[in-house]
Image 1 (cartoon, protein in one colour):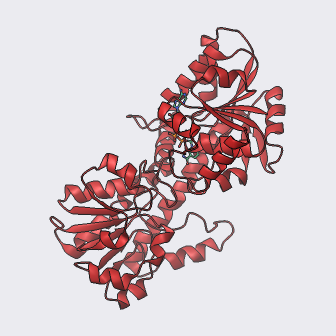
Image 2 (cartoon, helix red, strand yellow; image 1 turned 180 degrees about the vertical axis):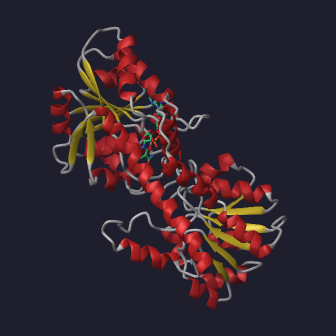
Image 3 (cartoon, protein in one colour; image 1 turned 90 degrees about the vertical axis):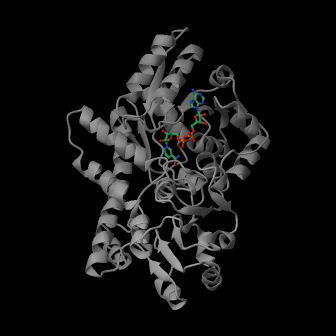
Length: 428
Ligand code: NAD
């Protein structure tokens, strides 16, 4: 089938490359000229494991094309995906300006029937908004359907998640659109059709539920510390219960990133606008805001004043295997450390480039051992696999004081204590 993606970011490019790999003809459009020029040369402008190879292969086979020309892409496609960003706006609601612009451009350029698929995460009712904007701006009055097909992939594992989803959710009331989408997803096993508004709601409810699970176990972790229990054991015991499940029960410094923080806030605002209280989701957000700064409280307990102390940060991206730092916990931690007058040294396998744009004056290192040199304490923020193999005997000799705050419970407390470290995890 012939597809067009408006927005070639983490979701648009991954989905486009995967559909191309399944044999469809795919056009990717982006308003960012630099991104398109880079993609045309086969360079993926962000880090996602395996994506570079997948893009290159499908460009070479002629299945995947990049263009700034929306009209060309739209004219050549039967299905048009909107995969633009929906960040938090100043009032915590989803900022739909990119979606509105995409709808406007579709309206101006549509010349025959298309299925317009909203894959961006958007508040309930956005499909109606997109339909209205397209209709208002149509130069040629042709029929079209706007449907919802939210995306559930996780950065760092995006290709696998896209190709092996737990479910594909499609919201539409149009029989014509349904037949087309059934054909597009014919090789996927768990396709669920529903109405548009329920599909839009499924995405927010799913993210809010997972975020709440994280905040729940973090609240339990904080209690574990007080009563002398180990949250990793508690989570293991809970996770064996099929009704609870083991995923998203890792205590740590909270949820962060490009989706959970903005989507929980947006859902709470949607509830407010509709006269409902979102007490559980609001509590999950509140718990998380405090949880992110727990490493700072722990540091102050151990070191007293942290002014003038050198603190090393291991990991900057919001999760491992991505260079995405949007709403990363590292940002809050770095801000708090700088506000307390600490000096910060930081390392990450791929995200230092992005973090430099936000904190240009920090000391950044590629090498973990250069980072830890002369540090008064370390904070593990992102649980990159690379950090599991750290030689802590070497680290101890390089640090000024052997203190580790393990924000993701990645390291082995006993081993570190045996080496002479002062170790603090979360909830253990
Ligand atoms: P992103 O910022 O990486 O990509 C969005 C792209 O859209 C950018 O490249 C931007 O230049 C482009 N764009 C914006 N307006 C445009 C326009 N009018 N025409 C052409 N291009 C335009 O965002 P993302 O992380 O890919 O997220 C996209 C959507 O998917 C969001 O709603 C997000 O919540 C949702 N989502 C993201 C993830 C994730 O892990 N990143 C997972 C599931 C769902």
